[in-house]
Image 1 (cartoon, one colour):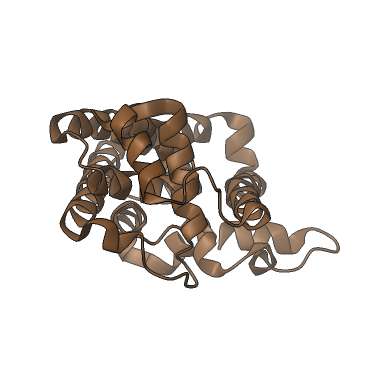
Image 2 (tube, rainbow, N blue to C red; image 1 turned 45 degrees about the horizontal axis):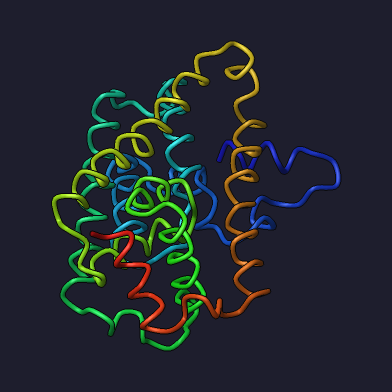
Length: 241
């Protein structure tokens, strides 16, 4: 694996797994998919955005995929990658919205587990309180929040027309935008000559927001402003109408 090789070559540094589980390493995931890399990338994007599994390398996966296409390490066309990522991101949020709408409060009343924490829901409502319906767009760039924002919109019965509009914009800016950024930087001579080291940096940068958000959630445990149904209802009234 490119990133693993580069990191292992640095003095005093262990394998890339030391940064976290293998599923947080975008390069490891893409390498493990082999000839099914395109399908694997699309599935990961859909799972993270649509099936309530927040701890996946969304940003770094998109950036890395774009860079590897530019390097011709991945042999499928950029337009196909962007199209399928957009569809996966869009359909993922649509699925999460329907889960929230169909299951309602049951989704948010489940007990804490390894990947689900009530603090994540409080954090999501903080974003809705701050950005309103635009949170569906903003959340695309925030680990954890991008997983639960569409579910919260479904639970709170956000107008479907508004949700779809925000979803299309978010899927384009995040899914296509980050992928194109990786592709554009991947054609720069300096990047081409140092792609392995730069992928390590991408992994580090993408993991840091996850660590930060988890630390904030643990530090606050539950946010008393948003952990009661009536308080969430007030946020929904302002953000979802």
